[in-house]
Amino acid sequence: MKEQITRAEVNEKDKWDLTPIYENDELWYKDLELAKEEIKKVSNYTSLLDSASNLLDYITYDEKVERLLYRLYYYAHLNSDADTTDTGYQKMVKLITDTMNEYSELGSYITPLFMKTDYSVIEEFYEKEPKLKEYEFNIQDMYRYQKHTLSEENEKMLSILSSNLSNPSETYEALTDADMRYGHIKDEEGKEVELTDSNYMKYISSKNRNVRKSTFDLMYETYASYKNTITSIYNGDIDSNIAIAKIRNYNTAREASLFGDNVTTDIYDNLIDTVNKNLHVLYKYYDLKKEVLGIDELHMYDIYADLIEVETDSYEFEDAKDLVIDALSVLGEDYITNLRKAFSERWIDIYNNKGKRSGAYSSGFYDTNPYILLNYEKQLKDVSTLAHELGHSMHTYYSCKNNMYQYSSYNIFVAEVASTVNELLLAKYMLKHSVKKEEKLSILNRLMELFKGTIFRQTMFAEFERDMYAKRENKEALTNDVLCDAYYELNKKYFGPNVIADDAIKYEWERIPHFYYGFYVYKYAIGLSVACYIVDGILNNRENALEDYLSFLKTGGSMYPVDELKVAGVDICDPKVVESAIHMFDETIEEFKNLINE
Image (cartoon, rainbow, N blue to C red; front, side):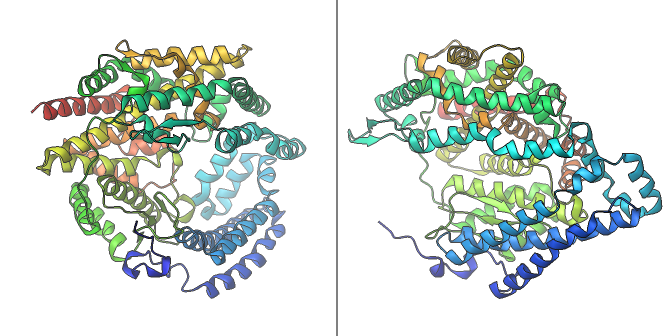
């Protein structure tokens, strides 16, 4: 077995270059001391709303400090993630995190000052100090919360209680991550192995049906034995969120959760309604799976079984780079010119090494490059990951280059759009240009899994979450039977008449951590739907589709997410956006069927 190389052994050209942030650690520590002094000056701005000039002085000061803090943070966190065993960078992350928290605490009086002041005062300031108009959107957004902000005394009380109110999710994590044990199963070779949450997908997608069934049965037998505990934990989380929403003058917990993105519940409901009207496409996918697997009955323990053999092709990084650039060339010369900087300026940390953080991400802000962490292993999924993370980085690049600092960071609601657009464009390009049947089938299989898992599964979760909160807000008791029965009926609906809804699936809701994120999962389905609509427009030369998309990348955080998407030519209130993703899913199923039957 090949040993992992150390960080020191990694070729410099394969590492990201962080020297544009700080040349060395000594300069970082020098700026840390400066930051520690600067944050103390926030106490000098207690009269910031006494005049327009005072407000502008504070905003200028806050921006300067925030940029310094983030510069320090990104240098420390990126270095630490490249080698988590390096105690020096662990220390630096702790030091800057503590400094940022201290600044937040020292300036905690600022927002209440605004909330006590009528917005008409700020409007007068715009007249007296025109430069303040540059910050109008951010200030207006802060004032959206005015009717949901409590008195200073009550805000302090809620702040003190915040750790207690988050206890259900922390308890759930402790139970499911640390305390729960699932027992043992026999793998494909007949060897006894311990089933864990991390290896569950490996065994539930096994080629051996007996392994899949035993994995499924054991997982949900275990969750069934904890049903009362997890029901109590989930009820505690729901009740806490409902209580906070009421205290803050929202009509429902869902409304409170969507408020930050300025998204209405109609958008959430439109997603669910549109998906429900198109479940026949998902049923077609499961019929295909049943046919390809060659089984008489498709059970819940069969749905993750691979339709094709695992890919064997190897993609060297240079080949992946060329492939991604070719695939994304449809986005235009300017996009590709800037994308090439990711390679020439070493934004990317490519290969794995001892202590390197797992997975992949894009991370950066206004005063850094949008860096990419990879653990590249030369597989098709790694090529797709490269395209995906480059999408994030190019979104960050365009947002930062085309906006002032205060509007340079895009909202998390639209964060997966650019990355998924790149992923889809790569898949479409490879399907068009590949001459290998196995490669095409692998790409199509990955796409079908993406649509099934994101558009349909996440929407099912969103529907469950919406309905359970509605029951509780109507004073209904959420017993384990109520939760399990509701989840079971949703599974029957979403999987359709040709899939056997095994009784144990009713316990699956207990193992979904996203139910503790407060109405978050619908964003995954919306993000993929938007990306499909954009890609369809670009590849089919819909009028202004490309221009609109590139304009969207430049909006940053200068408007609300729904309005940003309108810049891209996407109205997420229109069912045709979600329908575009479902149509692409349908086309992918047909393409797979035709190819595998050749």
